[in-house]
Image (tube, rainbow, N blue to C red):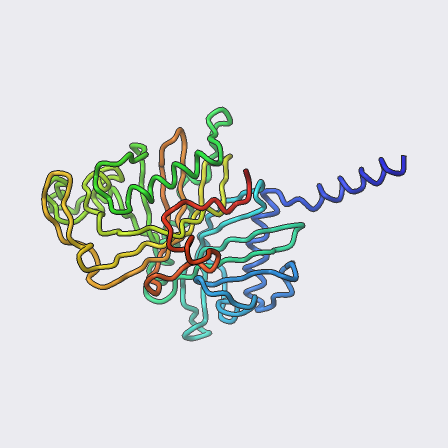
Length: 337
């Protein structure tokens, strides 16, 4: 009897410690509120917590914790109770220039929660002109697109592995894009980057829609499929350190961090599927750091949202060793089989 009672007490304690969807989402606010107070003690953390900001390992309380001045209104979550992780894209304010006039920006956060304590905290902060414009765009949107907030019917929910596999086809199709790959885009696929539409932009009055068969650069007027089938994104030479950090099967969401490399030089010269020779892409070595999320249903990508900023060429995330950081192989780091 004593053993049974001990087991029941242990099971009850373990259940109480498990962090469900509401609990994980709440940890994002706890994190933001603690930053607002500039006080790490307001956040329940493990003693050995690991923290990075823009790929740099720091002591918790450094970086944005010094200058955070307020939460914005745009909030987008990918919540993964199975992995005990939650990822977030949102707007914020920073007193980097004038405490009386905080500067807007956007950030991505990934938290790992074990026994209701944060064991890992990863942030990606977009500041400066890029961050200000992105924050203005997202604040104007107000709320995320409804597709990100809508549950997938239970009978249609994909496995974690298949959700990640489909999302990764986006990166694989863009890397050295040749227009001949398997691109899993739904007809309603739309992409937003730093709050601005990067696909399906209506053609301005009096302007002619670029023709994918003759254009020398891909266009935001085109659909997701048209952009990829054009072969004009070939200058994205390498998409690496592809880390899939949160999967929400109920909503068909996948959250990733990655780096896009543009080496310049001869990689700018390529041939399109219809044989046209094109020169495109940055003229100097260039790396984009990204947080990117996908809405996937029935094996197709329906919505894409990303925040991005330039980083030192060739840098890695701070969560991968060098070989993984320079690899294009997908990394499922959720820890769930």
